[in-house]
Length: 293
Length: 160
Image (cartoon, rainbow over all chains, first blue to last red):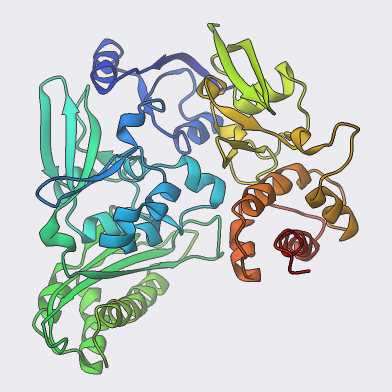
């Protein structure tokens, strides 16, 4: 038995909004792999839950007419990995999803939950941040669209107002077109572990594959929320595909990050992994894009 | 506490029962249906002892609300037995390979193995290791479990 005081099962997005308005202190539960575990720890004891688990309309991955990839926030990690559209346009998202937890967790955990919990170590979050995902949020006042960069407010805090829920994760065409990404997770175990550092890199190369036209790099656990290394991006954009550029990024990312010491790893160790994952990630992304060192 | 009617299909049979909305699927399967192959281990989705197949995919039933089972097809280890209690190939392989010691993790492992085997694909040892990584076993050291799954996979594909 779980220690909650009531369970309201939403029958539609609109109904979920109404339930959240009627029960303002209730906690939204999607797949439950965060909420139910917190509840077992006693952290949410006695809370009311609003379940959106049955909202299958939020589980699809589709393509908008303008080429925007529309990912239902209830899409499980494993379904994201298996999705044809994801494999075709943003395979790194499916690959990062495939590193979270273990197989059973990947069947229940959702991409929306992975960002709505506001956790920095979330394996798909750094890739969503690295691709400048746009988020569609539905609430009592209707729908609004914000950038994922404005969504994160602090540890465990995201820009969801009372009565609001995430209803789509959008990857714009200009973000994934000709873009090749790579995700590296550093953890103590190969499975069932939380990232010590997660690093998602993607590049667009020039037509002759000799210059990096656009590079984006994002980290999990390098700061309180998933973050981009903007100065490193600026330093690498326009640079040739070369060993010197690989060296450059390894040093440049350290100006952007702010890892902390925890029982998992010291800040110094994390900085070393941050440099190394930047180098390896950029190399792998460039190679996927057809670049040759 | 509020009770709710949950209709689902368990091991091929349409069933329904009123469950406490606070119950996990593990609670419902064990207490209401006496399917005690579904073990209570960590109860936080880490050990895999409570693993069952829902609509063809594996889930840790300890972190799955019983009411979510409405309309789902659920498969537990009990479904693998033949009409006279015969073991299935994968269960026999666990016996033959000494992949069972205390047995507590076994039903969960076998249900993941069933999901893997039913894809009908051939996996490398490393791929199998990854697919079975959601389970903890404190007795066997995993090698015999991997052997059992690998051998059954090869047998089913006609390669052993």
